[in-house]
Image 1: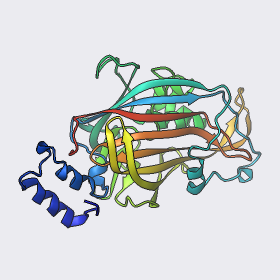
Image 2: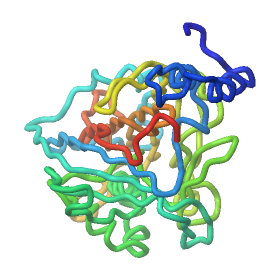
Image 3: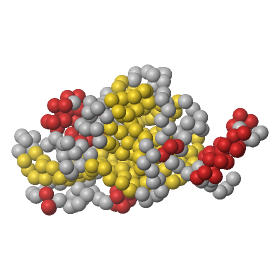
Length: 341
C-alpha cells in the first residue's frame, strides 16, 4: 500500500483487516502491520502509556573544560539568544569545548501506577533510573533518579541566584549542581526525557511538578505537523523569565536497534533560562549573562521516544559558546515488545 490512510477510513481499514482471513500478523503476511504503520503520528500513538511499559537507553555524554560566559555590564547589553531557526541550524554544527571527555551510562523509564506530586497534582508515575554499563541484567545496578533531575540541575547551574531556594527544597539537587558528577561515570540525567506525574490528554502530553498544580512541562501538543510550535513558562513560582520553546521539525523513517520506525517525528526543544546576575568565586557581582539549552527527541509511533540529543548551558555572546556538555541517548530496549501498544 502506497497511500497513507488517515482518519475514520484508516480506523475502518484496521478493524476490517483485523477480521479478514490471512490478514493477521500471525500468518506473517505483514498486511495488518503495514496498514497500522501508515497511520500518521498522533498523541495516542507516539508515546504508548500502558502501565508497566518500559524503555531503556544508552546515554553517551561528551563533556569538556568549562568555557566562562561572556559577562555584560547591563542586561540590555546582552545579545539575544538564538531563535528556534538558528538553534535548528546548530544541530550537528555546534563546536565543542576543549579537552572533551566521553562517558556513558544506562537510563530506564517505566510507567508504574499513579503519582501524586508534593503540590497535589496527579498523573501516571513515570519512574526514571540510571545504571552502570555494561548491564548484566534488565534490573542490574538500578539507581533511582529524581524526576526532572536533569532540568533542575541545569536550572541550578544556569541560575545561581535560584540555587539557594532549589537547594533548600531539594538538597540533593543543590549538592550535585555544585559538581560535574552524577551517579554513574559523571553522566547527568537527560534534560528533556524524564518522568514524574506524566499526563496525556487529547490536547497535549506533559507532566506535573512539585511547585504547583499547573502543567510543569510539555512534551507535545496535538498538532504534530512539521513547523508547529508551542511555548510554556517554567517554574513561575521561582522566576518570571524561564521558558520552554518547542517545534516539530520533521516526520521521517528512523532506524534503531529495534528496527525501522516509519512516521517518526523529531521535535526540537529549547529552554531559555533568562538573564541573571553573574558572581565571582567570592560572590561579588561582576555583570550579567543569558543562558539556554537545546535538544531533540525522536518519537516513533507505537514505540515511544527512541532517541534524544541535548546541548547544555550555552551562553549568549558575541562568539558561539560551546556550552557545558552534549548528551546523546539511543533506545536499546522496549518492554513489552510489539507493534501495537
